[in-house]
Amino acid sequence: MTDHHDAAPDAMAVVARGISQKGPWGRVYGPLDLDIPAGGLTILRAEAGAGRTALQMTLAGRMKPNAGTLDVLGRTKAKDIFAVSTLAGMSALDDVYASVRVVDLLTEKVRWDARWYRIIGKATEADLERICRPVFGDLPLPALGDYVEELSELDGLLLRVALANSKALPFLVVGNVDQVTSDENHRILISRLVELGRNQTVLTTTVNPVDPALGYRALIDVPSMLPAGAATEPIVRTDVQGEN
Image (cartoon, rainbow, N blue to C red):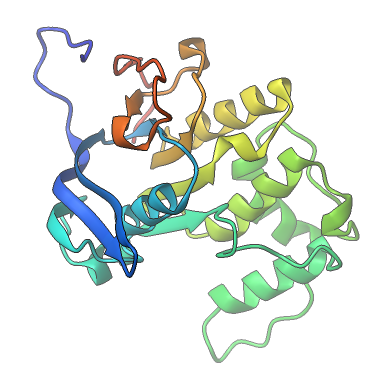
């Protein structure tokens, strides 16, 4: 069930038809049909597991579906989808060592993003502001000397998103918001992803209901990835201000 007005349908960032993934032990996910609107934050409600991870990797161009068709921002080949997509906050994919400092991660990122012929010194406060401020917004930034293990769940995840999203590619896929267990921090995280959705199409996942008042663009249940008996919800759309 979708809440639509009489206006023309929204532009879609992702159109998937019959996509599926299989592994050595059988089906991982699918077949699935998905329509993800362009701009704003879309949340897929799906149970945690290999299927959800594989689906997000597929949508971000890190994995090819075994069957079906996938269009992400007009791209249909995985390598082309990869070029316009960022994947962040995925366990075992962008985990960082707890014993490293924020400055070390920033320095590595600045060097990775720089042209090969530039000599890059240690990251500065200006680098911290440039890379992290768009994701943290009005929240306090971590200090350069902070160890990752000292950061809160929220700050740790926001830092991972900031490091991955330094180039602000059009499509941002962020692990799952359930990584942040505090109800208040969970709401703050979603609000930050909504804010990023003013300039990008942002996708994340959860297994839990989400308050529509937080301003996400769409909530899409993936019934085949929800626990048996879980109550499904209609797709919810809210106005997204600003240009996407």
